[in-house]
Image (cartoon, rainbow, N blue to C red; front, side, top):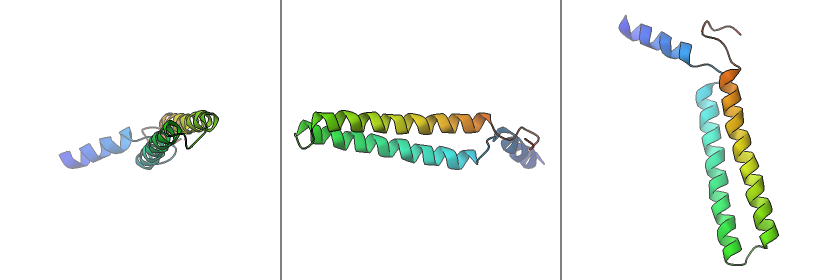
Length: 87
């Protein structure tokens, strides 16, 4: 009986319009990819394989994508089903 009540409480805590675990995982992968690409672009700029203009545009683009993903994950947690399972 105790295990069932723990499981029910987990379901009540999980809230989001989309599945929070999936949103968190996708957000993690997007932000991780943005960090990796940013490092690659920085290395290319250091070794003069990319112009500095391209460098700053790429960094800004990746920052916008990463922040947008994080905000989406946050908003998904706010606008979801309430604890009773209804919207």
